[in-house]
Image 1 (cartoon, rainbow, N blue to C red):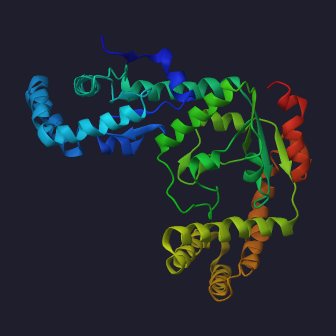
Image 2 (image 1 turned 45 degrees about the vertical axis):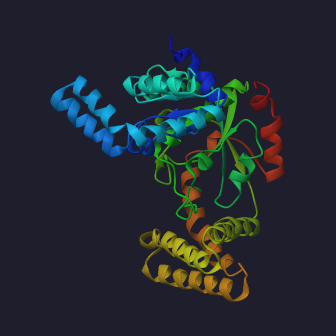
Image 3 (image 1 turned 90 degrees about the horizontal axis):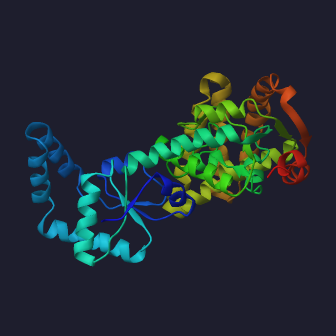
Amino acid sequence: MPKTLEEADFLSLFLNDVPMIDLRAPVEFDQGSFANAESLPLMSDDERAAVGTCYKQEGQEAAIVLGHQLVSGDIKQTRLNAWKTFVEMHPNGVLFCFRGGLRSRTTQQWIEEYSGVDYPRVEGGYKALRRFLLESTERVVESMNFVVLSGRSGTGKTRLIKQIPHSLDLEGLANHRGSAFGNTTTPQPTQINFENNLAVALLKAEAAGFKTIVVEDESRNVGSLHVPFQLHGKMSESPMVNLLVSDEDRIEITVQEYAKDIHLDYVQQFGDIQGLQKLEEHLLDSLSKLRKRLGGERYQRMQQTMQDAIKRLDDERSYQGFASVFGELLLDYYDPMYDYQMSSKLERIVYNGSREAVLEYLLTHESIVGAS
């Protein structure tokens, strides 16, 4: 009997990053899959659409016949070669389709006939794996304690998060820095991929024996993505640790992360000239998102300051021109918002301290680490 993996095996698949063949059509894969899955579809988008139409109009048997006609000859051979290569590279991997039905059973049979390998398929397919991850998120969030790392914009909270083993980097998972300037040089994942990767991170934290997880203070949205309702609800009730950093350091960190780092990423991708153009587009577009809140006159002035900083970067290869515009945004725009938001959270703060003190507290404090 062909090998199948059932729900009891799902945890091991994700904890061990087991390679997976995603047999669904490219459009399905693009909507959401798993970090350890590779798109090697049985049918193209057009082929899948044709088979689906045939199924509705003429029934399953006719659809199966059409599917075999569409995926035959050189097309079938090309796909068999791709699967064979994957199987040889990942002998411990698995394959899945949407519901673990006809597509995965057919492919499993073809692989065995072609290469002699009984490559396991996932019973219930993508749908079962996705349901397992969503249920795991709810279960782990309910069982875990959370500590929220807070601090004004520019204090380097994400840098600190990365130094804490029992942490969850939501901005990293969302590929977004969480502010109007938070877009990175690469797109955010889909909401489904964000949720799937978040679930796997929680499962790995649980498997590591952690009972408490440190997360950065985030709104419900991180860029265009939504933090799962249950997780954000738990975060909003959890104790907070407040990071205190001087304004000078905050400005320096902000220039580094929102100007220099992004500029260097663009240069690496597009070269010097286009990289600078991309940075200018990014910064001016980000600033424009604050236009209404800043007011017309103030916005125009800050827009000019930003353009002057970009010109200085082009002329002098210096990022210092960004200090004034980011400094004004931090002190006069983001800080008042932070103070207002924190006014209702003060009773949740259990510790205030410098970067070094907060890191030591989160790494060693008995109430956090002792239960791990």
